[in-house]
Length: 295
Image (cartoon, rainbow, N blue to C red; front, side, top):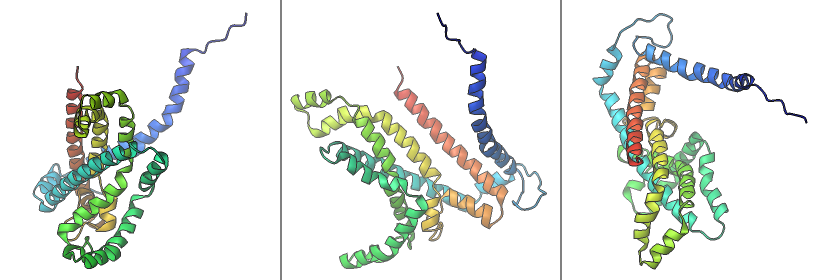
């Protein structure tokens, strides 16, 4: 009888290595090497242009810790992230529950809510910039609402929430889909038994829906926190960090120091500190998640 020739394990390993070597090289060159150089330059006085630079140790980090603009940007970034996480999680959860309960046109309605996720952030920001300048003031004047009678991007009190609202409008699509996937994994028998026992809608949501959705909540939380701390395109396109630095998140501060003030070493130090902050949040989230899902 004909016996199929088995391929050697060694040749299979070479094939796997051949498929992975190019992505590994690209990742190493464009990410690993860039990160290492960024950390190295943060300990120098490099301005990004000259070929000569000098090692200054922790001078850049010490100056940042004394810089009020850096702390203002960190504070703004934290506030931005809190507003974004709260808005995205609550809005996407409400949308997911509503869309999952639809009986007709469910797929079509989901597609409509997913459209903003397919549009670039800068494009959305430019559209909403015109809405804030041309449409919102007219609505405010018709309704007699003073704070809406001018562009919300022009005052420090309303600029940050206005920018966050635009990103929430764009960012809820993916978390909504993830929540819908989680809702569809809940056994229908759980709700039927709860209804028979006389549980209210709130009790069913609290004791059945939310425990099943905790893993998806964790996923959406991690993704949204990352979006908040690394946000750049929406604040930059809508306000450029103004007015009076009220929307200057850390990403804009890094951009300004690197490309406007030509302080690349300081910008690299700011990026390294941002990396540490995001790493602390991520590790804390993973720790809490593993503790909650322990045996």
